[in-house]
Image 1: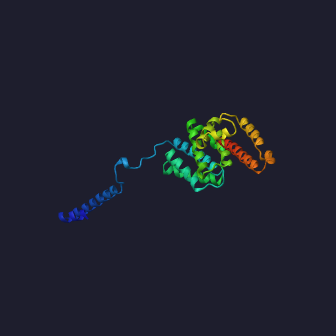
Image 2: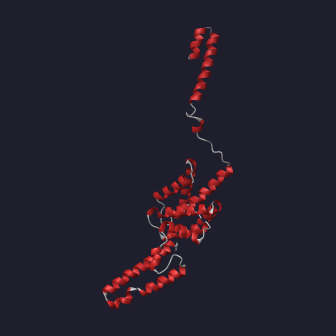
Length: 250
């Protein structure tokens, strides 16, 4: 329109045509510039400059890491919403995954839910990618996932132990992570007359001896009061033993 107006002022058919064409070209360039995102170059999205090898390595690691999370989550039954949230937060907050990478995580989680992965294979793959400190942090995060419902079931204990072994962690390292969530069990050991340094054989032997000594049947001839007292003590001994087994992942 501006080209036409100027052409009419100048006069002459040729001038009008040339100025109309010039106006169209200038208008097209202005429109192109207006399509660019606003803001400074620093605020524009930065392209992913990682090599194909680096992207493939992240994809490989995410796939196996998702397998471990899914195996722990499904150990006590179906995978629930809160467990998926914990997994997402781990990748987003701990590993700093962006929206595109989180999309891969969601895809792998769905795949593993539909088709159970090999826990040992996934743990071995993660072991090769992580330092010992990183493996301990991963096991700690898996404990947090298992405890999202407030309880640690025996199936979850067994799965966590298998993960720990697959990650190449020692028994002491496994127990150190367990103790972070459940304490060192001083009270429970004391009830069996032991310390946390006791071996598994010592724990089992102490429990059997105390359970036999305080079994309610041994004082049945002394009346109801004695039986009730012995029953309480017997229950304490059994609970202490079971808690120690849980602390040790047994």
